[in-house]
Amino acid sequence: MIEITPLLIFNIIWFILPPYIANMAPAVWGGGPPLDGGRVLSDGRRLFGKGKTIKGTFVGILAGIIISLLQHIALPFPSLGYAILRGFLMGAGAIGGDIFGSFIKRRVNIESGNAAPLLDQLDFMLGAIILVAPLGLPSFEVVLISIIITPFVHFVSNVVWYLAGKKEVWW
Image (cartoon, rainbow, N blue to C red; front, side, top):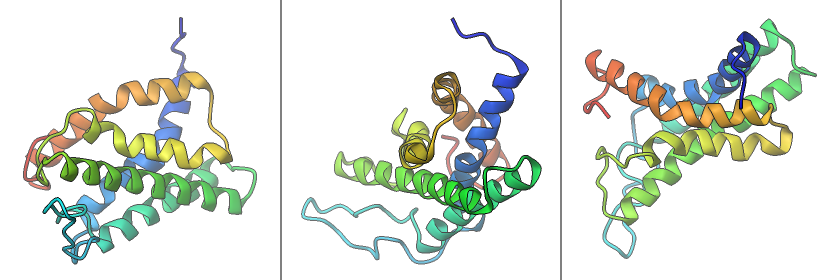
């Protein structure tokens, strides 16, 4: 059984900040031309869809780096280079996971903006974990709880963004 302590909670929050912020950043500062350039595959569906943009991809990765740098200032990592690389990997993993999720949704005929339970909530976090893993992960408990809480946190944040007028749908 996992004992929930203040240190464990801190480590979870510390770990999830870069991918969570990277995943949210495109909704606030993204937009512009689509990442897939409007390409359609042989199945007649878009590669990723209109919601994945060049600017959003860049902004998301940059957000991961910025959050990791702020973490480095607050509680230093082994080096500045490590902080930048960690932020890049977590940001790129989050954005890459989200883009991969969109690719899968298009292939199974789920339109852009329509819900795909669990895929929509976990793609970005799993992408971040996969990319940052070679650099090192926190404890198994931190990673496991981060994955478990992500669907709930993602849902709540989407409802808040929807109520604030930043999302067209509540999911």
